[in-house]
Length: 59
Picture 1: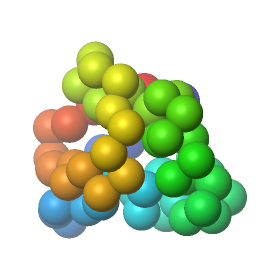
Picture 2: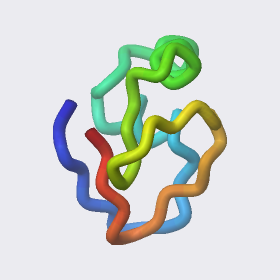
Picture 3: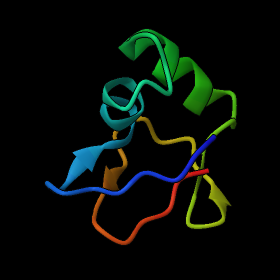
Picture 4: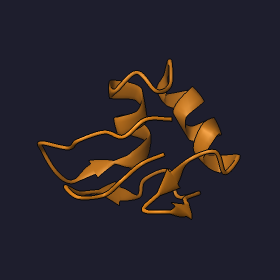
């Protein structure tokens, strides 16, 4: 995955993945998260509605 800079916060994790084109849909984003394929600030994140704020790093 790639790093994303957030300009408006907070944003739910699955929405961010969808809006940034990292997932084709909200359903795909939720699946990626639940499978443990998303890392936030160096930690695997499995909460779909995790609030992402400026300074958070997604991989």
